[in-house]
Each structure stands twice: as C-alpha cells, then as structure tokens.
Amino acid sequence: MESANLRAVERAIEHIEAHLGGKLDLDEVARAAGYSKFHLHRLFGEVTGMTVHDYVSRRRLTEAACALARSERP
Image (tube, rainbow, N blue to C red; front, side, top):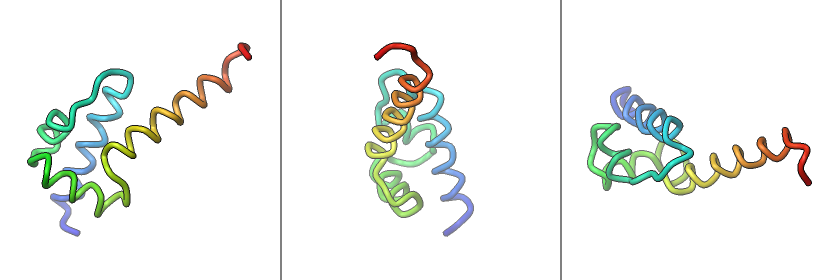
C-alpha cells in the first residue's frame, strides 16, 4: 500500500473523529482525504477492512457504550 493512500485514510479518520458527534457526509470525508468519494470508499475498505459507514457506526457505538459506562443512570 502506498504511503499516500495510507495518509489519505488517516486524514479521513481524523475528519471522522473530529466530527463524530455531528452529521457526517461521505463527500466531506472524501474532500478531507483528498480523493473522490468512490475512490475513498474503495481505499478505506482496503486499508481498514470496513466501509466508512461501518467505521462511523462502530465508533459511535463505542462512544455511546463509554458514556453509559461512565454514567450513574440505568
């Protein structure tokens, strides 16, 4: 894997993490990575083994689980 491609996925992940609590748009994530959304989708899958959507969903679930674990609420 080329380092430029890896760096693009890193930029995409950085953008996702910075905007995890808000609305995320694949076009915005692709712009942050410097690729078209179609190319990023393929590349992200190659590097991470999951789609951008799956990554976002899993990260949001992880954050929700952490919030529940820190909460006193049932």
